[in-house]
Image 1 (tube, rainbow, N blue to C red):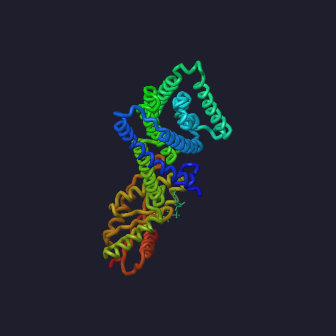
Image 2: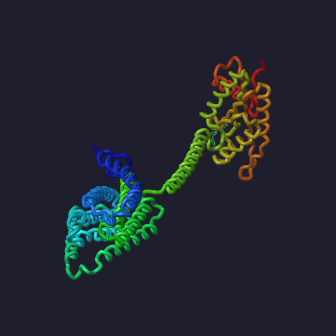
Image 3: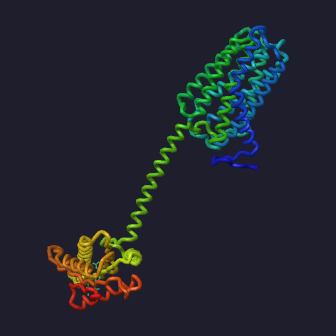
Length: 471
Ligand SMILES: Nc1nc2c(ncn2[C@@H]2O[C@H](COP(=O)(O)OP(=O)(O)OP(=O)(O)O)[C@@H](O)[C@H]2O)c(=O)[nH]1
């Protein structure tokens, strides 16, 4: 069964995930204990035993190293298949090379007494091969992922394995060659491995020091270089020789830790970010989300305002005005407060349109609303009910006060010096006043009553207010 625990491509099988998680824990433990192994080892043997020639221990150690290397190689290959990171291709090759070239070193353990060079030479050769591949990996670090079509196929991987087997044969040839044997072949391999490892570490740190897995790889490369120094200072089976193995193993475990970390996250070394980088990204994204939310809120408020407002005059539109009237009606009922309503209609508005044009009529409507609104209290609301018909809701207002406000508006409008293209235009308004009382059982009744009075005002000659009858 395949499960995908995170949103990255190429889901892994449950078994691979379980194994890599187990391995991650085990190697953390092994890595943290490796210096203790070295300390106990030297403490135990240094004084009395100059050499520790234990074939089984060596065979077991190499078998373990080869097994771990093959497993890490597989995990690295899976990461490479997923991300196409060129760095991972060369890391995979380095691990294949190490596995293939190092294996004979374990196999030949029991021949060490008769063919010491043959036995020993596979160690430096494997470190040389791996360091060379890691240097190439470091050179390619940070490049764009390789497209699927450009990635090696099984045949090409097999070709590389063949090449590394060829290295095994060359090493065997070298170790039996009578003229080459006296030459310092081992130190040359180790020196090259040191140079390659240090160059790779330097390159990686220069290119991606902030990426945590690159830091881990650079430390591992530093350990490989130190182990090569220890191997150069050692002779077979002495304590420095064993310690060199332990130092190399520490570097190897650290490198493999990087590989499983990549496998469990983005499957690429370059895109596993440090916690600082993640916090920075998180902060940037949070800021972005917050400003998008503020814009959205503003847009919603604008939409709400637009949906509630008459675009020409800025007064509430009919729907919004009726909602306001309903809520003020309910409040007045709750608080047993008076509520007044004015119905207003501009007189002979058709003449303004006909004589001066529609834009002039629009201008007159806007002027009328701003003049009327300027004469109201903050809680009063003006709404455009129809073309040139308006209504004003006056919360907490008695009949006499409503009448007074209506007269104030009528006077204010009459006094407006409306000028259209240099021509003075007279503007007057008729107003009907209604107040909540026993005859009104719902908000619509109030509006009907105000309308009735408005038409009375029109019929009575216009430019006048028709108040409610005295109670
Ligand atoms: N410019 C302009 N005119 C409008 C608008 N809405 C309605 N009108 C005009 O307002 C006029 C209303 O005319 P009538 O209903 O006859 O009323 P009136 O001329 O004001 O006459 P009375 O109300 O009887 O005094 C019509 O000509 C409509 O076209 C608008 O948004 N802009």
